[in-house]
Image (tube, rainbow, N blue to C red; front, side):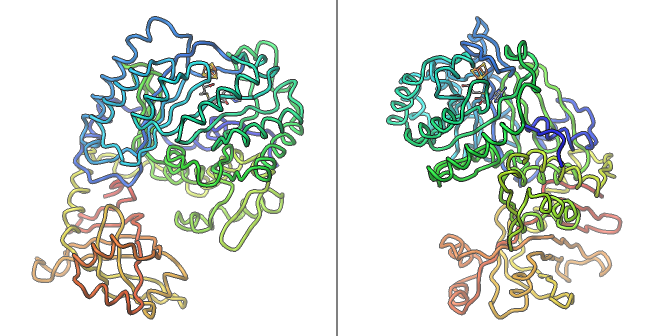
Length: 571
Ligand SMILES: C[S@@+](CC[C@H](N)C(=O)[O-])C[C@H]1O[C@@H](n2cnc3c(N)ncnc32)[C@H](O)[C@@H]1O
Ligand code: SF4
């Protein structure tokens, strides 16, 4: 079914990203976007910090990095300046950072004190979530005890170490330091002193690797109590040392698949590893990997440092240097869904509810059926699950499905491209102010016989989720269990209306999830709606979270605005 296998995100994303209309954008537009007084973004936020230096260059690598030189000295100063100036925007005064990722290169070429300075600047400039995940990529030869002590003090709670292989011959082939015994010795010491999440990278199917070596690598991973592992089939990249003597054609696809399947099966059966994404497995509960979740969920990744790439709202950004950025604006809201489709298929288990939430089931149905018929996917009652072959070709699957979605919903320029970001932000503020005083609204759901059901509900609104209480005997309860979509309408008081035709009203499209009554939510509800809440809970009412996915506000004649999850898109 697939002529070639996409080994990297980069290749797979080409499959659909070319269909997205893009407009070159300027730094001034980004600044305007970040300073607009809009409410908290629905997207989650991560920071990526690039450190493009290594002490030694590996034979397979063509990443954005160079050998450590004198410029390392000024790098930290420039980076801190950039952190402070980025953190100054209004956006970062109201939006929390859930994950920080130091990538490279090899960030631990920086001294422990440099991490202290950088983390101090980050904490002073951004709202860091209390349980912020902070990852540092590193290699064994420059991760010192002093680094580890400093990391603990700074809250750096996740290490991603490029091991590639434990085998001495393989390490020589990759131009990596140390033999197998030294790697094991060092990792044992790190494991003893580092309580956070310890993740490693592994490259499989390199020349000279045997099945026994591959399985021995798995045994070391399990013995050393590594928490998670990212695994990649060797890619021959232009610009790497290996590309001087090898090409992609020197590798057999069958061997690649065989090694891939062996590796994941051994981790599954010999350790208690399960999939976090297509190329990452973790011991149960040991790696939250917020950073990856944010990226796969089309969240914001704020790029810092030279050579860092990221995305903020509609902007895709690449920092060429500290004073030079390249940026495009994705002008159509379909890009958001396409990226989410790709992100959803980065996991081997795809809940049907995820597809329904994005109203994708019909657009993708034919392709999903084809994938099932060809043995890439299995269908269960609530989810689709990739087979081992599906996981192996997972990047292809994500790319193709995102393309299919875009073919079914051809992107067009948004009609309101004339609206400035400031105008949009004003409307977003109007929406937030309009809805703030409401304690109740009207809920509309669809019954099995397709008849609409409407009634009033009590609400509390927290961020971009509305919570309500619904009786187990109410028609809404059964309708939402059947089909989790609803509309919530908030309308201006009759006494405030100028005339009945122009009643100001806001309708939200929402997806509903039934939740166990958390104590904090119950308390919040009681504060807003009184002690009757507790009584209702005892009488069989259940809490429902209504996640806003879009909506419309009507402010007067010819003053209607549509908005999606994140911003006003259409007047
Ligand atoms: C940014 S690198 C950084 C890690 C760190 N600098 C190190 O190597 O120790 C991330 C990972 O991508 C993988 N990778 C990089 N180039 C690759 C290639 N040509 N083929 C397969 N995997 C590759 C490696 O597993 C590598 O550890
Ligand atoms: S793989 Fe890592 S350590 Fe090796 S050259 Fe690339 S970035 Fe540097």
